[in-house]
Image (cartoon, rainbow, N blue to C red; front, top):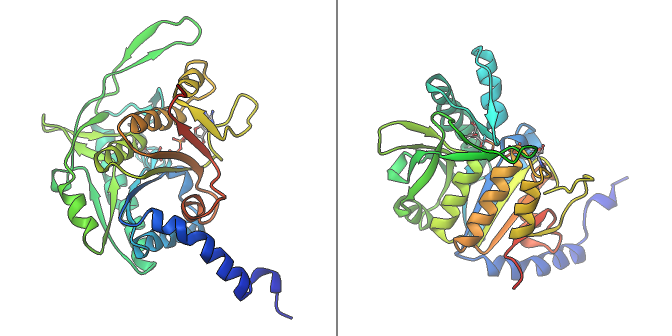
Amino acid sequence: MSDKSSTPGPETEAHILAKALPYMQRYEDKSIVVKYGGNAMGDASLGQAFAQDIALLKQSGVNPVVVHGGGPQIGAMLTRMGIESKFEGGLRVTDRATVEIVEMVLAGSINKEIVAMINAAGEWAIGLCGKDGNMVFAEKARKTITDPDSNIERILDLGFVGEPVEVDRTLLDLLAKSEMIPVIAPVAPGRDGHTYNINADTFAGAIAGALQASRLLFLTDVPGVLDKNGELIKQLTVSEARALIKDGTISGGMIPKVETCIDALQRGVKGVVIVNGKVPHAVLLELFTEHGAGTLIVHDKD
Ligand SMILES: Nc1ncnc2c1ncn2[C@@H]1O[C@H](COP(=O)(O)OP(=O)(O)O)[C@@H](O)[C@H]1O
Ligand SMILES: CC(=O)N[C@@H](CCC(=O)OP(=O)(O)O)C(=O)O
């Protein structure tokens, strides 16, 4: 006996398509930057669903740009090499040996894995990092951290951690007009000749800002920003988000994510959302249906 519940009938299918069409038209020719976090990777069928979503965006006339992370995968490689991972303020303290491994893992194996998955979904992906086509230049990150107990601020020296300071969209504009989907690793050169490790969220924000993207989506491993009780916050204003960072509710890897959301909004990106990348087809559900879940970050109300 066939399982009727798993196969929608023609009426249901038509209904789904009719509902998705206005969303598809809304994004035609628009840039959508999707940040694919290292924590959302790892499961083959989820990866396949992600690649299919990106392929479908391109086929519907959207200009998808993938920026990926790979924090856990870098951590695993460092462990194999006998190097300890150390984070401050959600960023990896990156010495000379670490930056070599970061570039190898991000711009090498992970980047090519994602390219291969999108190619297998029937599209043409091209793997890049900030070095390609002079796309991104970085400067050494100058970060401070405030101790929540003492309220004392101190300067962090994170080594070869960079912040994107220049983004040239020439190559991305060229690719937008082609069949190619850019998949970008967050590594970039400095004008000082060093290679910098850039947090993938920060990097995605810089790309989205330069492209004036319609949407910046962060795919992570939690449903969105959670409050002190672990409940999902569906919408956050910029001031509310800053307060949650200050009081420690938002910590670790969620700090650069939320800071990037704020920054991207201020640079003119229209919609910034943090969603659960562990939900199959999270990208399509967020963009083309009413069931967008996750946390939407919005400007302060006047
Ligand atoms: N308030 C919060 N809400 C949700 N996640 C949080 C919060 N504070 C800290 N986190 C942590 O941030 C993590 C997501 O950031 P990160 O590990 O950098 O993911 P990714 O690899 O997807 O970029 C979550 O898995 C969670 O452990
Ligand atoms: C400076 C810094 O912290 N860089 C990150 C780059 C990768 C990343 O951001 O990956 P996720 O998105 O999976 O966290 C790192 O070295 O882990």
